Length: 164
Image (cartoon, rainbow, N blue to C red; front, side, top):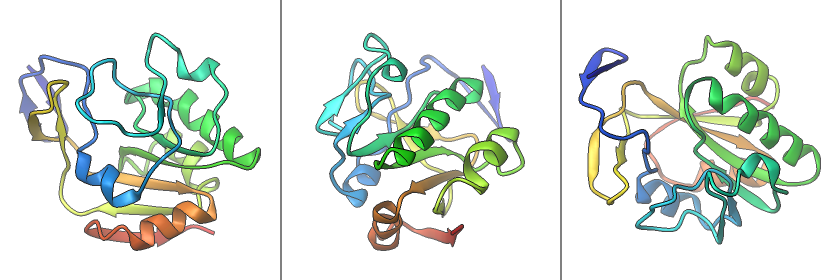
């Protein structure tokens, strides 16, 4: 049992897949540097798994990133910013913990826009089945003008906030 936010969940996995409707709404991505070893659907044209160590790989094009949560996400957020500084773009999905050091270091002054998703996502298990509601609300973070357009047009329920 683990306490995630205000709810208690039985946790049998540390792998939580992005709901396929979120990926579909955002359009095709070139790369997912945090892909699950076992995934019932693709999140991008190319996937780096834990075996590939996405942090050690070159990122290119339009990147989808649902990083490991907690402090393990920080290097992925940093790499996304480097990727954008080198001409790429991408969208990151994390919990909407806006008061955290990570949010201040990698989102508020670095991202172009944030879509605060309405309600709580239901991530999926590695077999594709739907899990319980996430322990916190989630945000989609746009890095690059192309990704701001993707958030504007995705029709996912929520509130879009422009940062630049």
